[in-house]
Amino acid sequence: MKSLIDNKQFGPWALVTGASSGIGEGFARCLAQEGFQLILVARRKHELETLGHELASHYNTRYKIIQADLSIESAVNEVVEQTWGMEIGLLISNAGTGGAARFFDRSLEELQSIIRLNAVSHSLLTHHFAKKMVDRRRGGILLTGAMGSAWRIH
Image (cartoon, rainbow, N blue to C red; front, side):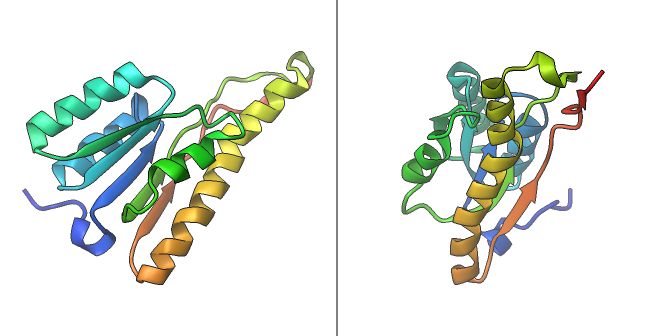
């Protein structure tokens, strides 16, 4: 089977947020198959551990788990600190939430949390890792979004 992505083009480590399920888990599986070492980021540590162990056993890949809730202001800094010195060649910024609701039925705190998760965390992670990729002259970033994150006013 032809390789879908050349890990030599990017660098040894791929960081995937929202890796505990859904699209993020799918990306992690594909990247492990292509020979990437993985940094799996999500809120649910048990799911990350299960996935990491499975991928390491099946694809002989190395992995690191970072339990982080990217809707919390300090979480991006935690991800940055725990990856310090690692060559992240590919960032899959996938964490997000959907769920339509009436705009005024949500508290300001809840709205701020959703915005941190669906927008701010992507921007901050991209800013941090893209600078390093530019300096190395290689790397890649893929941003995904929560399609169902619309709010109804009425």
